[in-house]
Length: 616
Image (cartoon, rainbow, N blue to C red; front, side):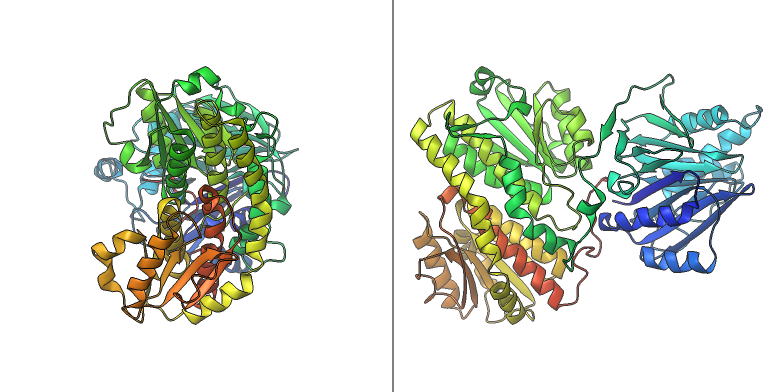
């Protein structure tokens, strides 16, 4: 959530900052602002709405200077107003600060500052932090210096309870930017004669691919030709310069009208990339060296806990079916936001996985740390190589899906499911699966990308179905076994981007209450491939049709059983039952996409949502 970009270099800062903000629009926001320094003054421009609004404002009254910071805000404390937009000033209007995260004790700090004579221009927690830093800077009797500002920041942050990723500038130090993080991502981009600060490396990849991913409690001091990273507690902090895996081209839409559609169409490649180099037909198994566990250690695992939020949790639910059916290891799936506050019994034979596309999801990161705190080995499945989860987990697997810009997750879901399938195969082969069974699974997996490509050829057919039901006030998604999580994911996609109220349920649970919602106006989407529970799904479809409810069915190519039962059918290629979620989810992604476009919704930037949820 929210976005930060900072720049110090040789050219005008404002155009570079605005370009960075545009690249972060997918993160979700409701206002934007810029601060630059020139001729001993801090110039701020900010407004509600899209970055385009801020661009228009800046074109009318450009802020000058080669040093600046900027921000896109997703409202937490205080409404969506120009006054609450970042950057925020200190009491003397000499320091400007932008902030991602939440200052939990801001009201206590604010009340104390008001008693000391401070006046505030917004309702935000961020302005309190700006005033606090300014207060300690002004209280120092030393000459204006970088060390004076850093010490003021340290003193202020030690009073803060909560999370932050911040960047600040001060008019006394016109060639200097300071950044700090705790619980909210921040990355330093290293250029030649210029340096960058950002909450997401995609904001600066057009200018540099050399990056330092800051750790919690790091403070970064940035100049044109140099930088220094120290600790909140004092002393230098260790860091590593990483090469960004993707390029500027990877974060462009290309010829697609929306990032979401581009990412849906990338899935044949991203699924293949998730499996690349990890399947061995000779050994009839998967190889996941990143787990950093020996076969003996994996055999000692007697329970697996999969932890995630939203789409990642739905992938975990598919993983539960996969691991239990292929490896016969008990699996539990937990909401990350609940796990961190529970006292869940876990013995020494338990192995935890946290799943997060960004590797920065706050709830998931906190769940990982809680699991590790209690002595449990906790592995990660994530997409961002330099992310906090990737750096702090006890091992794990990268998705290699490339940047996912669309807020509604698509390719990350199928990549996560593919990796969980590899995990299930690996665990199964060191337990009870025979070589012949392993070879068959490997061959089935290798065929999946081309089958996904075949599903994508149904785009026009799915678009016509979406338009047919675009007037529906709500929708029901139903599936069984490993396709129940797919029903949940389909309903989530529909809610996220079309704002149509949608529910996902196990097919058999429909008659235990939600059948009361069935009507001619409410379409039901059944995920009903030709598998071991097809006849049960068919009975549930007949229950809906008996009540005049329209049915959209996802079935298996070559099977005509659904045509007499359903109003519309979308066929996917035949595959092993346990792999069907990798195919059946694709039509649901396209259905939600086309319906949202038909309704005129902002597909890539749906209201109230953010790509990476870094606040609680």
